[in-house]
Amino acid sequence: MKAVVFRRHGGSDTLSYEEMPMPQAGPQDVLIRVKACALNHLDIWIRQGSPAYAVSFPHVGGSDVSGIVEQVGEQVNGIAVGTPVFVSPGISCWNCEFCLAGRDNLCRTYHLLGARVHGGYAEYVTVPFRNVLPIPENITFEQAAAFPLVSVTVSHMLFALADLRHGETVLVMGAGSGVGMMAVQLAKLAGARVITTVGSADKIPKAVVLGADAVIDHSKETVSKRVKLLTEGRGVDVVIEHIGPEVWASCVESLAKGGRLITCGATTGGEVTLDLRHVFSRQLTIKGSYMGTRAELVKAAELIGQKRVIAAIERTFPLQDAREAQELMASRRFFGKIVLVC
Image (cartoon, rainbow, N blue to C red):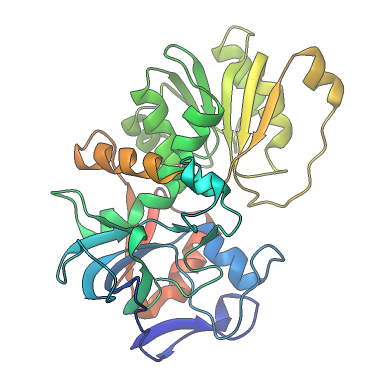
């Protein structure tokens, strides 16, 4: 089969479109003929090299996959060859106390497709049968690949960790990102007032279409100052953050008393400064979030299928152009998801 691989850590020039052995489905696996694979910043972090994501070479990235079932393992029941499916990107054991309690993203062996194991930058991929879910009706393979990782992440952040309530105000950092795009929609659907940020004027109307009540162009305005104006000095109840040190101070400053900041990423670095006096005097809550549960993904898929939430796609690329696709992602000149198609 054809796949996009890298044989060392480094820049986008390490990506190579070449022949790779066809993956073999084990007894409890499903072989999928990949139709679409969405990009995530995780793909770039793994390619560049991260202690949190040790991989062996050559490696095939890509966590968000949709396609057609090509083959099922001998112990797999209920999944038919030819079925259009999408993949739950988080792989867990389903035997530990966390998995049995429905908290599978806390599983001791939890890992992501395209991280510890080969992913969807290929014509075929194998996954455990429990990670295969039917594509909601009336959506394309591209849309089916564009929502899983970001939707399960945002659902967990907003509802399991932030405990978002109807009528509260949410600040979503970076509406043009996958997480931001999904957070604006899910927060609005839950009855929140949504303030979000973008990096250029052309992204403002796109954020409004998704449901944002107010959009701040952070290239022209100080986010925390504008938030205070928009909230009459009060601040926001919840901040959804995935960027890191570049925005951290503004995020903390934007919180109201008793506010909750949920972070799931560090696209601008991993170290921030924090004045603990602000945390305890304003009774702030700061939580880290990683992915979400299978139940949260199933619910998000229902919303996608009902068209109550959309997976905005900036552009699709042929699989062989993965290098160009990753360069577009790194540039930040996009809104929504970037998707590879086979």
